[in-house]
Image 1 (cartoon, rainbow over the protein chains, first blue to last red):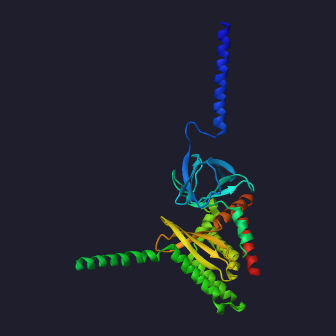
Image 2 (cartoon, rainbow over the protein chains, first blue to last red):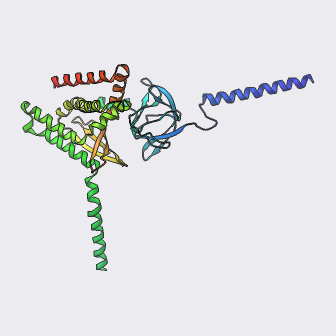
Image 3 (tube, one colour):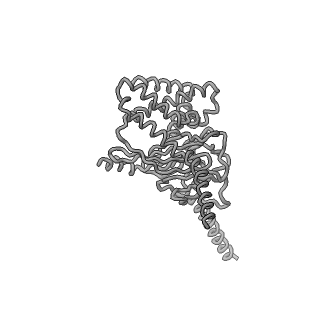
Length: 146
Length: 206
């Protein structure tokens, strides 16, 4: 009887451990189990500058959503953004790819517009600004003078 | 045989004349090109180079730019969400002030023209919107990519510019972030005051 209690205790402990591990990996990996909430819009960028899946989408520096996927579409980057229902994006809002600090990670900043038209789920954010390639800019002024 | 051939060539001729000509006339690139050529002809005109003609030259450049730029749309987009809060009079005051600001900022660049070439790099059109890609090639062989974003007029075939991106940096986005932070920190009245001061100051130096 005593032996059975010990085994049960170890089993429960291990199950609790596995549950904790699962929770941690979902939390740290920023995965969603019940699917993404909110809605999606997309934008076409001429250069993402190495934007990653899962990068944050910010409005006024506040993290409001995430980059859902980045694919190539007619030699342009098609970036799908996932936003919560509470955040409405106007038709003339501008999405620009920015860098945290000088060499930090890339994220998408949306500057809200003033239009009354709101981008519908699945719609396109027309105004985009590609990542600024510092290296390219510098090389232009270093090697430009021939 | 020959009748069929004649008929076919007639049909294809009709197709070419009837379809492609009006399409060509309303191409956004074509219209950007017209405006650019107009400005270049003013800038290159030796008769307008003398200092006494400076005012006339400026006026001609301004007129050519004004025909292609939709200043109200640009001002509206630059003010962002604050545009809707303005009264009709405030809007009427803001649009010319904004166009003056942009014109004064870029006028010196246009006047310093020294043989730069313009290359047209294609366009994308979708719905009533278009992007015209242009490369400005300086004498030192540097390429400066400029993207004009245009919107088709509700009536007529004119495409009007509502945003310009140089090296990927959008003019409207630049002004939008600046205007928003000024309005948040102080007020719309203060923004207008600052714009007026800036326009008056630039007017003295140029």
